Length: 130
Image (cartoon, rainbow, N blue to C red; front, top):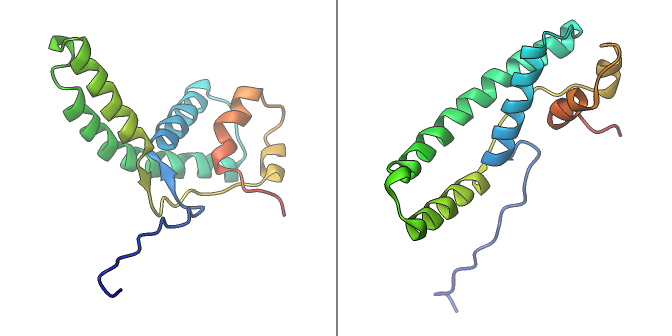
């Protein structure tokens, strides 16, 4: 039937990030910067570059979140439920072609001892070993 349109979901690429992943990545990198830990040149560069990339993507998310959250304090319980549902939906939106600067586990080993939370903050930008 020529009138039938088949919709398909595009396969998620490595450069795709949901808004929730952007928020989490940005928060993790911000904590690393605040900790003032010394990183190797390569890891420090990747952190700085990824902070810039994530801040740019976050700005779009945050502007939309602010529109949704407008008047939240004046809303009744049902309106707040709807607002929270919209924010959750916004967090699930996929962003294509977020070009994260990747580092290897070897790069991280050059940074000396690291805490679990530091590894966790860098996980999204660590490339899988083949």
